[in-house]
Length: 209
Image (cartoon, rainbow, N blue to C red; front, side):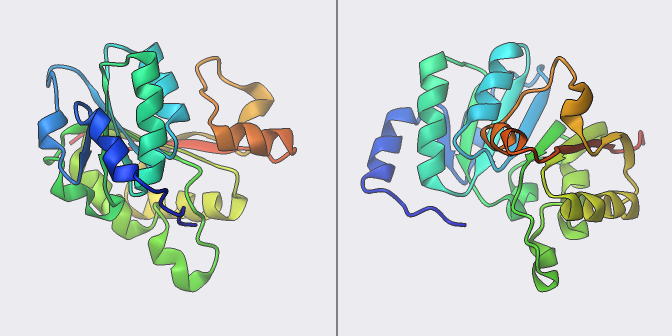
């Protein structure tokens, strides 16, 4: 569901141009010697700011189409004074236009829209069309960390990962039953968990070339 754009969002985003851009990654790439992790659909930035704070040795880029969400995320980045986070207002479907081939070490997909109707399956971020794009930008051995509360989407995604030739590991339908100590809970994750909804998780890996 699209958020209603709040008044003066673009104007307020001008205060964060040192790490926020619209549709262009080049001005905000820094220190290519570091690994690059990208979150697809950053939302309000809870996840990316937490993981970046824990891992200052890694560069993080968050892609989010909603400018209102990016503004909220930018405020959190500034509050935490994170120098390893960049945010881009961008549609994930064009990801291959902003990253070079085999440039990204890891992608995160956290609680994306399940697009439950069959006619909308092509919009799912784990549709084969998207996975082929991800494979272009991921390095050999690069990984996709996928998390969702929607079991139907999860089962669908496992099938698509196999179809795309990705190696899948650490598959669970209840991540919190034996929660890894390094798991970072998103806002949605806490909400679903509190309601008793189990969290599905897996890692899909590009085979070494």
